[in-house]
Image (cartoon, rainbow, N blue to C red):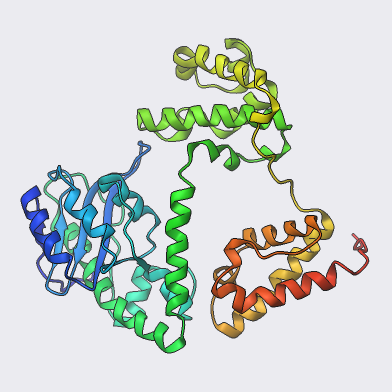
Length: 386
């Protein structure tokens, strides 16, 4: 195992110390942050550690001892302090869980590396090796971060993540400035935070159920209501969604509309949920079926037609070609979901770039995509031979 030569951390294990260091962090241009957590049998991540690095030192905040997160929430809201993470989605969820705030302004070094032409989904270990020529071990990734005391290896690992991240950010920033792409990163990180805020609506989780589009409009409303119930119960009980009701059972309930315990059991409802929650679920399904159609959600999009599927393939080729010229991964330039959304705008008779292809993407790929679709949509469609 590689022995990491990292500084001894400063432990932040009281509300008073957290307040003191947060006052100092408000004067920093940027902070490197990371979290360690456990999420095996719970809905919410159980925070085991929060790491911070500034220009002076590395700090380990113990969430098992801190009870007042107000000072850190203030740091997260401070516009003059950039908060730097790597592959940040789970980390910012932990931060919001602890403080009630999403860290902003935000920089994700994984995204920064992709925009700088270093490759997509680059792991922290590889990025440190590439830019700092330091070999990091990852043995502690799945450690029990709730144990106390933490082992020496856990502490070194936790410190290394923010110690080297603090060194990485200026290097990445310099590259992006030279390439004229710093604003690209800022725009994408702002969009990331906005997406995190929007996707936390419990009433929207039914959209994630596989094959939900196959259900009739009224059945999609039933699905929405039982999925909403599951989401709220999973949060209330702090258990994974599948420990309440799995997706297949949700779909079965929406499709077959069980009206009694026996039918719920045939739909696949777990025995423990059946014993405790059957009456409530039967009522929810009955009320959903009685609701007027103006309460039904917008019908989910069906898969693209074969013709539109051909257009999707062609748009991917345009994106891949442009991405190669920019030296960035194609999925960073335009994801499949964004291209599908673009193609669906043609149903109204005029192609329009979706919001996810606005900003720098509109400048870099928008015009070629619109020109392609305007051209191919005017050509006769011919089925390919099987």
